[in-house]
Length: 337
Image 1 (cartoon, rainbow, N blue to C red):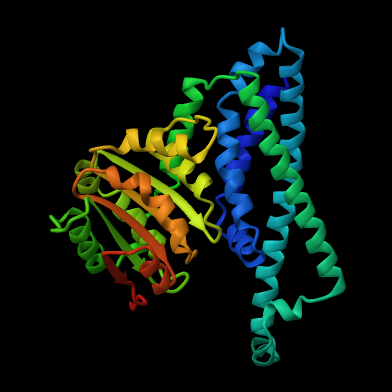
Image 2 (cartoon, one colour):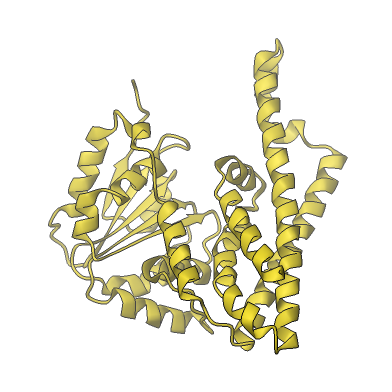
């Protein structure tokens, strides 16, 4: 049946969307914000498929919704496969260039320039059009989901919550040698900081690939941290800081629920109710945006947390840490074995 196929495909798509190589390529092409939106939207749709499968028997409109969803998931799968192939080809090309006698010359020329051809431009425009079309169709499905009154299945909601937890899991063997950094940051998270604000921001700053996210994951899953904070949430931000989408991702991560909100005000009211007078820990991973006004708007519902609440931000930029008004900035140096 269509709904069974759609559920299975969405599970596969969500796994593809957390691929490190694919997201690295997406960031280089400036399309990571769209893929992150897909990653947040698809589980919300998946959670109502069980209800849709029952209602479609008597409601033609629901049956059409399920069929359109199935078609769209296959389109998304095709796009992700194309991007994965390109990511692999790019990786192989870099390795080949590095092993040739001309590698020194090639390193002088940026990769973007070596790929700058009419054919690549045409491909980029076509891919951008495909991404925009899929994003629009996903938005339409969400709107129709709400108008059709499709309800979240409890089991699906729990599955989404587990997937969010899995996004923050890490192999601790990858952080061997970072014990000093880990203990220092634990002190900042669990310590009794004196201050006029209940919520303190700790920024982990360092160059790309140095281990900021990995270290943050270790902290997030530390038993002391789990016991210390009543609520924990992990959200990947990336380059584009869309206040509504990030706020919704925070709400979803903190509650495990997929609720729809008509506007940002209603969303922030719900988020305040969840976090009010509770000691929480929020990880904002891979923050790039330096727009202070957007950050102020994003953090407004977060300030209701109980004393001792912490926000951890991982970023490559000290400017971002400053814009976020980080009370504590932790520069992560290169690991030396």
